Structure formats: C-alpha cells, structure tokens
Amino acid sequence: MNAITIPKQGHVNETTQTDLSQIELNQTVGNIYADDAKMSIRNANIYYGDKQAIENISLDLAKNQVTALIGPSGCGKSTFLRSLNRMNDTIDICNITGQFILDGEDIYAKKLDPVLLRARVGMVFQKPNPFPKSIYENVAYGARIHGLTNNKAELDEIVETSLQKAGLFNEVKDRLNDPGTGLSGGQQQRLCIARTIAVSPEVILMDEPASALDPIATAIIEELIDELKEKYTIAIVTHSMQQAARVSQHTAYFHMGKLVEMGKTEDIFTRPSHKLTENYITGRFG
Image 1 (cartoon, rainbow, N blue to C red):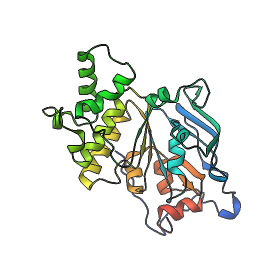
Image 2: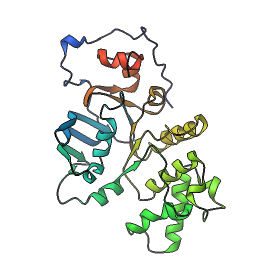
Image 3: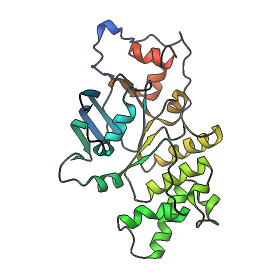
Image 4: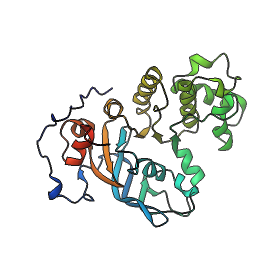
C-alpha cells in the first residue's frame, strides 16, 4: 500500500500554490481525467428540493484503481458517491443533472434498470448491514436474485469464492449456517463486501467502510481494498486522510458541494495546488 507522509501544519510544499483570490471555487484544479476511465462524470449537479448539494462536478474514476473522496463533513462526498449507482433515486426530492458514464453508457438513461446497475456498481456502507440470514445466505442472496447460478454447486462456488476474496472464508467456513449478525464488526463488514462481490460488480463504492471499526479491523479492510483494486474499480469516501493516503491512487477534495482539487494522491498530500486543500490536509479546518 501507499506510504505517504501527510505534512504537518505549515510544512506543505508551496510549489504551484494557488491563491484563493486567483481562482474561482467552482474551477477544479489538478487533473480530473484518467487515461483508462471506468466511469466519467461530467457537470454533475445534485439538488434536494431547492438546496443544491453538488455543483458542477466532473471527474473520472480510473479502472482498477482506488479514488478517495475527502473533505469536511457536509461537503457532499457521500451524496456524490450515492449518485454513482443511483441510490439517490429513492429520495423523492432529489434531482440530478449531468452525465454519469459507465463504460460508455449513461447510467441515468431511462432504459437502464437501476437494479441491474447496482449489481454492476456495488455499495459498501459505513455501518455493516448484514441481512438477518445465515452467513451463506447473505452472500448467496444477490446471486439468487439476479439468476447468476443454475444449481446449488454453482451457488456454493460463488459463496466460497466471494468469501475468499473478502478475506473471510477461513474464519467462517465451519459455520456458514450461523447468523451473519453474530460476527464481529470487522467480519460483518467483510461479509458485506463478500455480498457485494458475489454479483460480479465492476465498480465498488465504499462510504467510510472502516469508520465504525477498531484499528485492527480497519487495517484488514485496508489490505483488502488494496487487493480488490486488482479486479475492481473502487471509490471510497473517508474522513481519515491517513487512510486515503494509504489505500488510494487518486484523491478528490470536496468543499461545500464543489470539487476543489483532484490528482494523484501523493501530489494532493504533499504538493496541493489549492489553498483550501492545504488548509484541510494540514488540519486548519474540517
């Protein structure tokens, strides 16, 4: 994983530092583009009734890499993340404009079934949310719903493979019929990751997946994220800048519903180009 030292207050490299008086907040600095983009979002605006939560955001999610979304509470990170698999569709007053492209396809096209989209773009939430079912049935549920198997042997294979990818199989292989809710917090989160993997997604969205976990469980989740990127494109919302530095290759800094800066994680944390980014990563606010 990445080994980036987050600068302490007053020790940020001043190279190419952009003064707030020289740039509008709605003009993102850095590089929003990826050479091999899995998802491309352009001019995204999200409204809750009359309130605008996300303003004119454009960025790419690079294939088989981790993009961290950071910023102070209430800056729109989670709202933006949820728009990437249309979870905001469930909120009546939410209105979204812009382009959200997954492998050349507009995910907000009327012909696209959001249920099928969410199989392609899975979500792991902040608090582990296993179903009130057995460990086996938690993982098998999505495969059954989407008709991914023809028989019990195929379903068994999906469950075992998904648990292995989530780094959980060896811990639970002898108690697959036990309730998923009986696992520890860290194990429950890995079970939810296994459940997401079981439907063969292309993108995994993670909304602060380790914020409710102890340091040991957090380290396991971070190692898992590092392994998962070999097969999946990952976007993670995190309040921990140390975590963003450890797990991501690209970082996007949000502020008041706008994307202030985006670039390679190492550059964001050692050579930020915008004063707001510097202020946040050095602890001056947030």
